[in-house]
Length: 440
Image 1 (cartoon, rainbow, N blue to C red):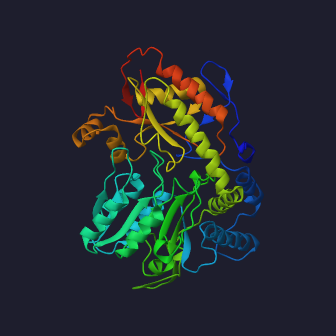
Image 2: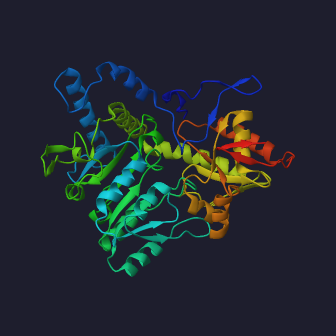
Image 3: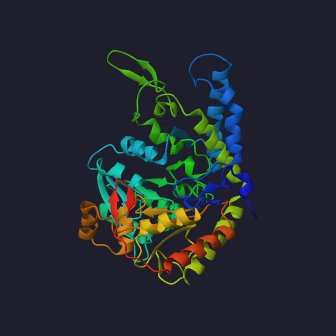
């Protein structure tokens, strides 16, 4: 099925350097996705009603406040929590902000231990490093996590691990982690679980309840701009009992019931964690996009993206000089995230050529997951450190990340040009990095 009619902006031609016009191919959905048409229509329909949320009296303010709060119900329903009273939704600006908030409100003691993995995006690693003691579970030679290693660390810590925080799906290899099995382990050893859902939400159905209480997810975070609502919003879907016990990380207007000379009375959750003027359009867009995904059906989404992923991987195997990362034979636990290099080609140069010659957008670098990428590339700690300090940036990859609207025809165009670049003569140019731009 062709889903392209559901999206805005994906068929707008762009001009190449030679003056020709071409319809671009966006294989960088792991970074940011285009909006659903329903989302941009929602913005257009509601711009005339924009007003303050939970501040002041008047039609526009009441209208926006009602829609703003109604979106929480949509989000809870999306994650299978509509009939529960266990979780609430805290609006944020991004997945990164969500994880920073959770790190700061849930970690109570510098001696508390936090377990995570070497697969994580920096957003699910760095916020926790300065607040407690980190325990890392490493990956195997193909980049996968073994959950037996997670249990070993939980046993070894003897109850000192308070939080297990793990990605729902890798932004480098697309591996989907068994979040409910890991939740069961975390709860068995009296830890809570946080799932970084940034790469998962738009691709697979998530029921945060699991099949039993032990499998339930305590906290899940995500960004709407990776789920077809690029208007600067994100959310924490979190367990009320823990949020009720915590003071907010951000403070100011809207999060207090009373402020006195020597004391403060916070508002109730979730408003307690939503200081400042809220992103009304981002919130209603996020709810609309999630509703659209649910209506399309995740069986349809998974089938379409899986077929395209396997088609690309299987054809890339036959292209000379192309090296792929992660398991390319057993791909059932992988989303449509494909990382690769071309022998004797600079990874950034390769991505630039794909963009400038055929308007194919890819990602190049280490994808804010440096420890993971260095492991997949086989770089030692000393080599990795020298790579950054020297400014050579020798280590990196190119990433193609797929969305629901991508097609087999786009895949063929990508594969054809990749084969052309991979097998044409390399002039052995020298590269100098200057302010993020490759100069020849």
